[in-house]
Length: 340
Length: 277
Image 1 (cartoon, each protein chain N blue to C red):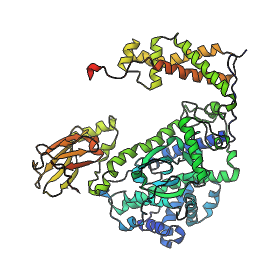
Image 2: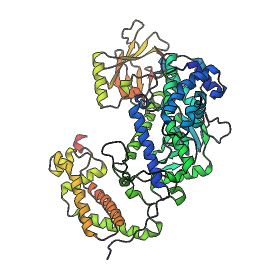
Image 3: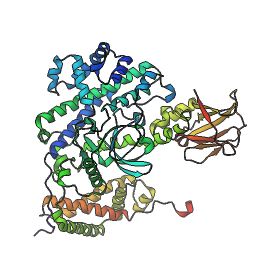
Image 4: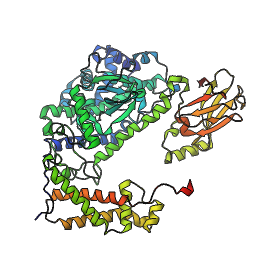
């Protein structure tokens, strides 16, 4: 006599195994291309802004980013936000989050949905075939305003996207119609789709850094953008950072110099031998340390201000990476102009 | 391979399509790009046979047709991806040659990728979405030497979730799972409980506070989660030898979760003692 209650399962939607097989084929093809062509796998690393070639003809051809963010829009994000990929990243704005951000879902790289939380939109354009509702995140308007409007989701598409998102976030069942348009669940710990998900999540991990590094600074004057040499951008505690720190030990690296508005002084940001710190120096026009601005405050990102004493101050590298302000001792902001 | 020119790329963007470009630009882009596309589509794309006989410009037209974003919104061109391309070129480096090279690199990647996509689209159009061939269930799911076969990946996914009509049975199974977990918890050693608890909350098995409580070395403790779980699964299998295999698997999965959850409540606090503050 059975001791367990009898459970019944809904049948698998037609074509599920085939869709999984097709997805796996695409994934293998992607791996093949990465192996065969080193160039294919190389991420796009934009040059520091000060190193961009001037080319008015090219610049004039780039359409301005589209404003007017609205729920239901499909947008192509500025590639400079995503240094780790050359793939054009499209997102759908599926809901407002608050007045400054939207709930967004990225479109996936493959033509078939990978999991039950990826939804086949029914669109023919390869970049817009699959919406990844498991990789949903809120993106601030500052980021989304750096994008081009590509199309709008219909109300029916938006409703379906929202339903699959609810399924992804709360586990609520999908109706048969939608079950037939999503992928197959992951049930095995060695499923290659787990690697794929890690990669996709990683793409967006640079976004908050980008917001802090560039966007917060740009409105206050493009000259305040700090271009960081690549060793600074690797994750802390990785082997690379140790190597970077070692190379810096041998030769401290100057990475930013600014003219201080209303004075003949300069602000110089230097690395320390410990690559997790930055030395801030106030210099006179001959390059000697100056105490003229002692008491001024260097405010790195959202961290606590450090006071300039004897012409210098030290603050954390990660603080500076997220942007900074420079205030006189009385709190008035100082205009800085980036020098080459 | 023929090299492109920056002027050609810019003209292509300006005119929207190669069809409207000067002969010089047509030649510069298509004679560079067509071999890449043809090389990638060979053996995968039925139309590649035809394309091999086509001119490079016609091959490029094929590529343009594939990559265009088909839109419904009035006023949107479907070519926003070219802005993406230009923006990357703009940020590429200090010389105009860097910009040209970026165009080539970005489009090469696109050609390589779209070659596969176009083959896939062609297959869909020819066979319909339901007729993808699964060559064999034994086919490995990746090119790695130890890759699992397709059937193993799919075995537990061959259903569309629980039938809502069995909600009562579902709740009963949940209660049984919880009860079995509680029963087994009383039979477990502290070391096993701590190990499963750590796994459940993703806490390090090398955590000194946990190791001290477990009273063993890290190397020994590291083995505990698997050993503990194997013992619990064996216990459940012996409890329910004649049940429907799928229902039993479901029970094991739920009971394992319940057990780990109970174990996690026994972990020492992660907060530092007040004396350290």
